[in-house]
Image (cartoon, rainbow, N blue to C red; front, side, top):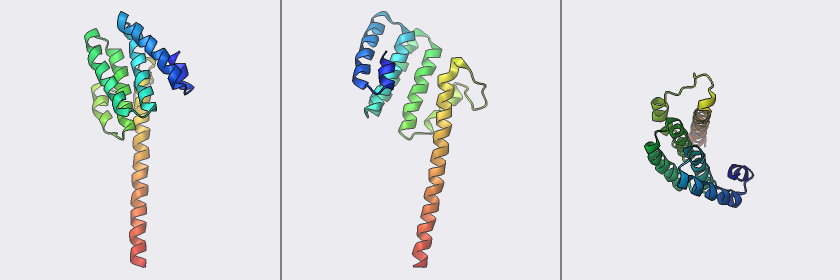
Length: 151
C-alpha cells in the first residue's frame, strides 16, 4: 500500500503505511517484506531531499541483512544504494558493484535480477547523458574562446 501512495506522490500517507509495515517486519524479521520497505523508505527520503539519509538507511540495511544470509535481497539493497549514488552524480560508484555482482550490458534479461539490470540501464543512460553534457560544455567553451579572439 505504501508503494501505491508513493507512486501517487502522497508521501505522508506512504510514510504512515511504510512505518506500519516496517514495525511489523522488525518484530517478526520478515526479510522478504523488510527489504522492499527499506528500499521504499530510501526512495521517500530521496524524494523529500534527504539523499544522505537515504544512503545511510540503505548502508545500514545492507550491514544488518548480512546476518540473514540472503544474497538476493542484499543485491536489491546494493542496487538501490547505487541508484542513490547516481542521483548524487557519483557515476563511477557502480563500477565496483557491477564487477562484484557480475552484471553486464550483455546479460540476457532475467526476472530474478530485474531490479539490478534496470539499475545497470539507468547507470548507462546517466553516463551517456553526462558524456553529452561534457561535449556540449566543451563546444560552448570553444565558442566563447573564438568569440573573444574575434572581438
